[in-house]
Length: 88
Image (cartoon, rainbow, N blue to C red; front, top):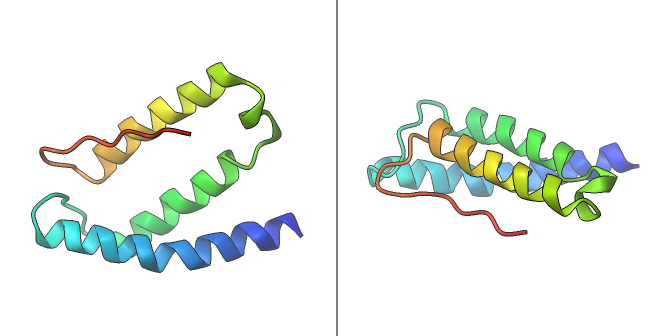
C-alpha cells in the first residue's frame, strides 16, 4: 500500500516538475539535458526519504536533510542566480 502511494505521488509530480524545469531551461535559469529523467530521479529519492518515520520526530535530521536537498537541487539543476530554500 505504501509503495503504491509513493509511486502514485511520483507519477503525478514528475510531469509538473518536468515542465517547470524545462521552462527554467528555456529562461536560462537551469541547464539540464534531461529534465524529465532528472526530475524522476530526484522525486523518487525525495518521496522515499521524506516518508521515513523519524523525519517528523528528529528536528536535527530534518534540518540536515533539507540543507542537503537545497545543495543537491542547486547543483543538479545548475541553477544560475537562484538558490533553493527548503522549509518543512
